[in-house]
Amino acid sequence: MKNNIILIGFMGSGKTSVGIRLSYFLKQTMIDTDKWIERCQQMSVSDLFALKGEEAFRAMETDCLKELIRTVDQQIISVGGGLPMREENHGLLKILGKVVYLRVTPEVVYKRLKSDTTRPLLQVENPMERIRELLGVRAPVYEACADVVVDVSDKTFEQIIKEIARAVKPA
Image 1 (cartoon, rainbow, N blue to C red):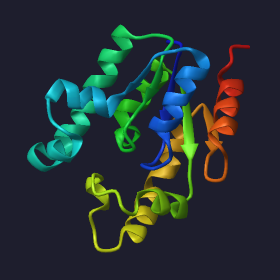
Image 2 (cartoon, rainbow, N blue to C red; image 1 turned 180 degrees about the vertical axis):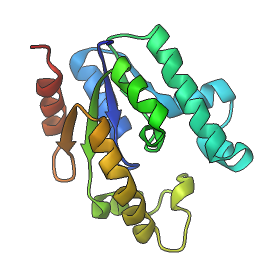
Image 3 (cartoon, one colour; image 1 turned 30 degrees about the vertical axis):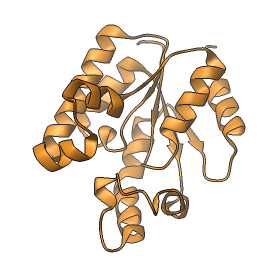
Image 4 (cartoon, one colour; image 1 turned 90 degrees about the vertical axis):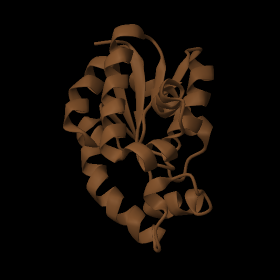
């Protein structure tokens, strides 16, 4: 197993924001798999979904994990909210490092993302209903993948970072 810290969770849980702050705190580089894929494909995630479809994007996420296993260690890795939903990715995440699930409530997700038009899965008539529906399906999968679960809904970044750092510290 590699010594990376992988942040998983629903969109709006703070994976990228927490990852950036955690990377400064631990003095480790951060990789965002969505940004990695956008750079490789020279296209935004929204455009990839629209032009190539969700299944093609999910395959790109799996390829990204395989590449990261080959090439990175001791880094912070933030993954897209849907990446853990692909069963093949569970084992890859475990090989890649310590998996930290940033657990968030549907209400907090809605509050954070209600005006964000870049989230393809939330461009629906009733986003709150969609958030509850997706989170209901995804939360058990996130928990099953995770080595550590951190509730992030009502905590400051400082509290979240310290909780993660304590939880992933080698024994």
